[in-house]
Length: 407
Image (tube, rainbow, N blue to C red; front, top):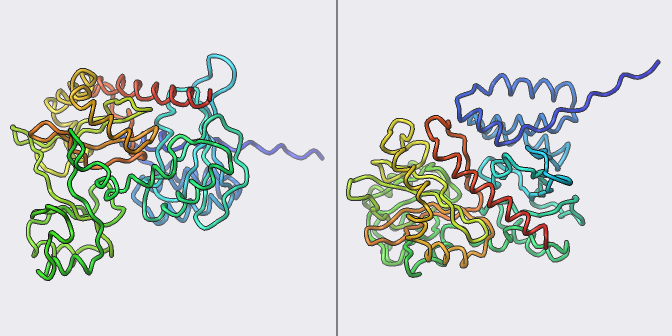
């Protein structure tokens, strides 16, 4: 009797595909159920498990997502997304990304940058505490995709030492990524011409409790600071547990209500414009060249693009369109020297900057992060200006890879 052929496993869908569906309101539960059924039928279907973990993260089920991801990594540490488009000639450009287990904030979302290109993305997961591989899978370009966090710092340090043994120079050196923590970024950028960044320092809960109780002067924790302050737990993102505290009593209430033992403390800068609106810009540096990412406009100081009401306001979209279509002659030209100093200071091939403008015309930097998402998930009929701008970023990304591959 002839054995039935084993059907090939379905390819990985990946982050960009799944996040775009979630962003546009698709119910991911039926798709997640299909991944569960696939994994149940074939315990070696690592792609089903990895896509399932991503779907769970997108539904806010972080702990279940992490457990599912760990199950996937027991089957395989290597995942591949085929090139979205065939190359003009030859084979696809092979990009190998070094990743670390974790949620959607742990690694740079490279699948978004590969959209519409001939780039084949292979993702190799490195588990902290385990030996690094002696050799790497075949590739044309290596990219350190692990973002800076308390959990990743040891791995990034080990990776930086390992690069010489591998004999490779990656896009985004691990040592440079380490410098993007909020406090180290402030140490690097404050005082530079054309730049402003709120003073930022990392402190333990007990020290902050002393500040709240009047037992420790603010000046000993944060230079040249005054109330109000901004506080957030270490490694929090997207506004999670981020608050402005106006008084020591407000700080005490925050500490009582918020978990965590280590917190970032920074000065609050009132960056609202003359019309009372706060504008937060995302700028992308690709091999030193600046591109528009997005603009969020809000009446609240804590601006995140998803809560800024951009879909509800034609005027806000008009402002974003002006920023993005006129970037080279407008915002990018005004802050060209400041953006150049940021690029030179961090020495990263790819970096995303969240920023604003001060009333005296300086670039106000909130965060630098090579892992921040840059995408074109927004509906083109409502955001027609965004898709051409994102194509420029992706073309610059592809150019960076081509130059690096040619070395």
